[in-house]
Amino acid sequence: MKRVLTAVVLIPVVLFVVFLGPRWQWVFTLATALVACLAAWEFLTLARQTGAKPPRIATLAAIAALFAASYQWPDMIGLISGILSLALLVYCAFASPVARVLADATSSVFCLAYTGLTLITLPELRDQANGPSLVVFLLCVVWAGDIAALYVGRFLGRHKLTPSISPGKTWEGAVASVLGSLAVAWALLAVSEQLATRWDSVVLSYQDEVWWYWLVLAVVVNVAAQVGDLAESALKRSAGVKDSGTLLPGHGGVLDRIDALLLAAPVLWYALVIHQHF
Image (cartoon, rainbow, N blue to C red; front, side, top):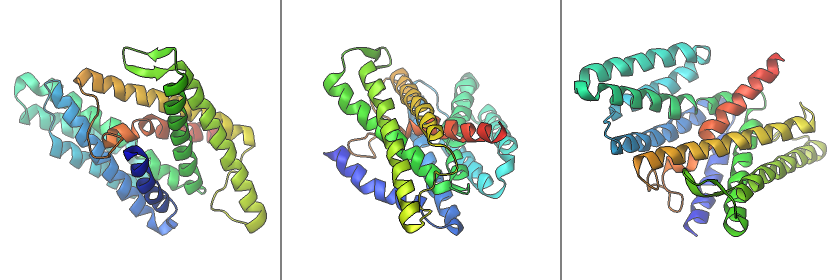
């Protein structure tokens, strides 16, 4: 029940921010940056469980700077992320005890990439011509896959997927996750077509590509989301904890809630970029 109530509260808020007008892009970027910083804080806490003590304030400042730069100079993200990574390395080299420099520097730089560089693709997606539709597609595909995997795996799961990483996940749940993502992608296409036909609405727009393109994207995004979920589970298991935090009742921490998006969002973004060039 806690899981359901948390989702009921958060999903309308998320969709409201997604569908704000183009001149409110900064609000979406700011909200994404906040989520990235919360997830980063939880990751840095996990890192401390392994003996490292990466600088929290410096890492969060680097993530905030990354989002500010992505809003102001979106074409220079590669250069700016490199500069910030080197800055964190130098900071740890002089601020951490010598015996801990390697662990602290690698943890902080990885945190910048894992929670920052991955999530800046969300504002990039929303800034496209059909940006809100792309973000809704991403979120719905990930959410539907997660829900299908949870319930099918719980009631029908028999064959373990990766018992050493996440004992609760099964092959049955993984297949159901893909099917759930395909189903919601098809539903989005149908709703979009009906809206465009009856009210000439552009709230959801997927007519710029053939229908099977979006279904293929749904499978790609779903696989990336499942891998992202497993990757975060491996990080938690390495740190010896069950949840990354307790901020979201029924869901654990922020990192637990967005682990799938951390891979799914950049994969969708890069898939769109590759498609534009081929």
